[in-house]
Length: 154
Image (tube, rainbow, N blue to C red; front, side, top):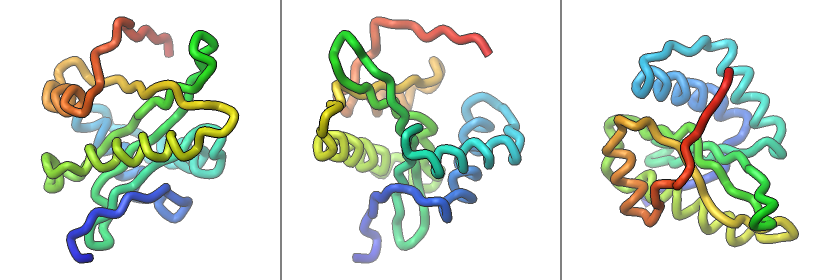
């Protein structure tokens, strides 16, 4: 049992580690220093409102070593939901050990087991253009680069 990976849905008492991971992710990938109050409120809002999405955590030896967030997008073209994988973070000392692979497999199993009225028709994520290590991981797990580009206005 020691050294075994446990994947579970995050709860409100996981708020602190999720804030830590989100701030580390923004700093590592974009050099951004996120305001702790804003991130804390954002994570707490999602944890308290499951209709917005959910977080999954990976634990090893009772330590949270990775996480990701799922939000949804309705597709009228497919009459189903896309699950967007966001805020993926693995502690540096646990990277390249299959933790993201385990999280992703759990996401797919969860989507399959929750096929009620609204089916999950696919999984999407966005990744920094320079993050070639992550891109290789996603491709190795069967994901393909999308035809679409993402635009935004903040």
